[in-house]
Length: 201
View (cartoon, rainbow, N blue to C red):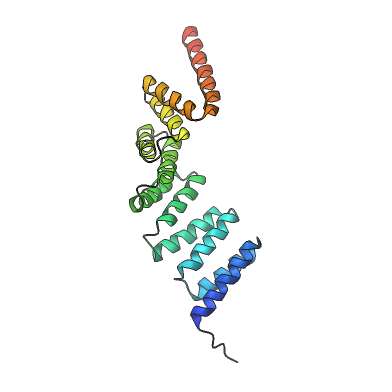
């Protein structure tokens, strides 16, 4: 007996089944169902998106990146996919790949301050202070009261030798979030140790 159900309906049914499995946290079964769907319909963007969400839940960043690359071949203008790819590369300490993906995301959505913050994080990890500062300035234009961004600006200014700007940024960060005051004490401890080393030399 042949199955006369249209392919589009079969795909829709498969996606509904996979979504139901994900909602019950049966991720492995959902992945199997989605991979079978994609074997038959490799250009189904919704199936790829559902698979990516599932793999992220399963903490499988490498597999999720592979799936994102397949999705981006189908939808190269998918801004969220570029951002997710950038974030996953960042988690894997693949900073250059992260920067490349996040920049493509920001070309498509330049007013997304969260993705500018991720880009700044990638540059901070690589100790690219000026590039990080430029990204953080974008964050603060879009979200001027973001305490973490102000704190990271202070770090960048300090590493670039501008202690006055660092102090101003740090004061503003603590005015927005008093929890950053604990970090000021850590900075003071570091300064004391540096002074002691200078006196001993």
